[in-house]
Length: 268
Ligand SMILES: [Zn+2]
Image (tube, rainbow, N blue to C red):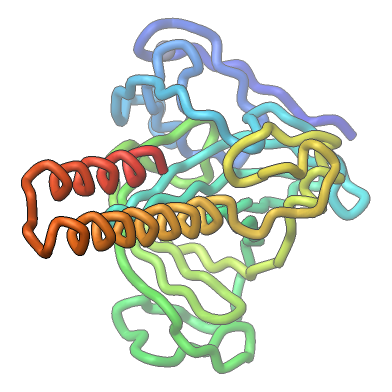
């Protein structure tokens, strides 16, 4: 069985858009970045979007093998919440399985859509929630904003939309005022992802996985450590300079310290 292709015409610019997921509700034009509402008859433009140039570990269009099935990366959403950013890639299998690959703080996790027996009403969830018969503890919740969107999505969504989420140990609930999705978390690693796709783009997250070495747990975390070490070193230097100057805070050495601090963080 092969992926069935459907070709649409962009409402905004007329370019062809290939769709693979029959359940897609949003499709982003690869030429102009317009977000089209596939649930409307004439594929209404939900939003316009300027392309970013960010390198991700995987790309839309990549194919691989996951648990014996052929899978393909078809969509991507980048979320932001108070300075935190994370990415979710949508994957479909030839058998119709839908998986999201989340990359949060350099850590990859699969999320598979499930249909729980329970009726889940996000507003009524407090500290616990019963999902698939398990009594789950709420570990995190909030609202994330979509800052980047690409490919085909199973949500009807556009840039700047807000999505509510509630995370428990084993599940994640994502919701808007119209839709709700429940996912089961499936742990994965950069090593497994490299086996699935046969390759990975070299990024801060994947570290030296591409070079065939051991998996790097958290690229950004490692950078953070180096920053702290530099920061401490600068403080020690300032301290040494100040004691030599007899405690006088000279403008020169102090502002020098500040700018080093700024640039080391800026380089993160
Ligand atoms: Zn277009």
